[in-house]
Amino acid sequence: MSSRLLLLELRGLVLKALRDLPFPSPDGDGLRPVQVFLHGLPEDQEEGCYPFVIVRWVDGQVEQEPDHKTLLHDSVALALGVYSPASQEQAGLLLAEMHDCLRRAVWNSRLLACRFELEELKSAVPPPKLRWHQYHLATIETVWNYTWPPRGLNEIKSF
Image 1 (cartoon, rainbow, N blue to C red):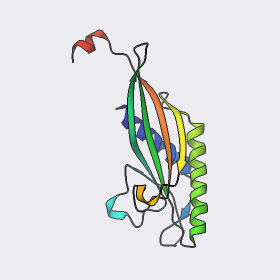
Image 2 (image 1 turned 30 degrees about the vertical axis):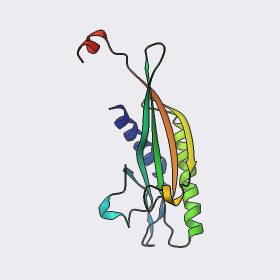
Image 3 (image 1 turned 180 degrees about the vertical axis):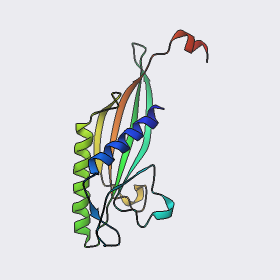
Image 4 (image 1 turned 90 degrees about the vertical axis):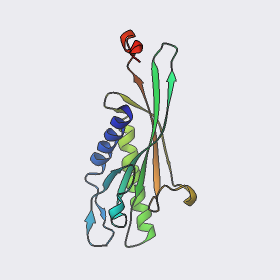
C-alpha cells in the first residue's frame, strides 16, 4: 500500500501545481488544462491528450537499518508531454514552464502524507531510444524514502 499511496499523493501534488496553468490544445482550438495519468497514456486518446503528466513508479529497494527499522526507497518519474500548434520552439518553452512549475512544487513539498521524504530530484530529456512513450518529452525523476512501521512479535510469528 505504500507505493500506491506515494503515487496517489504525487498525482494530487501534480494536479494542484498545474491547476491554473493552461496550455494550447492539440487541435489548436483554445487552451486545455494539463491531464494527469497514472502509469501511461490511455489507449483510446493517445493523439489528443496533450498536455499531460504521467506519474509512473520506476523502481524501489528495501534496506534493513542497524536499529532494525526497514527503510524503503521508491523512484517515481513524472513524464511531461506538451504540444504547440505554433512551433517546436513554443512547445519547448511550454515544456520548460511545466517543468519549472513541477520541480518547484515537488521541492517545496519534500514531505508527502507525513511519511514520504524526498531524497533526490533529477530532470532530463531522454534520448529517443529510451523514451517511454512516443509523446514523452521530458522526465522529472524523484526518489522518496520512508520507513515501514516495526512489526510486533505476534505479527512476525504469524507468517
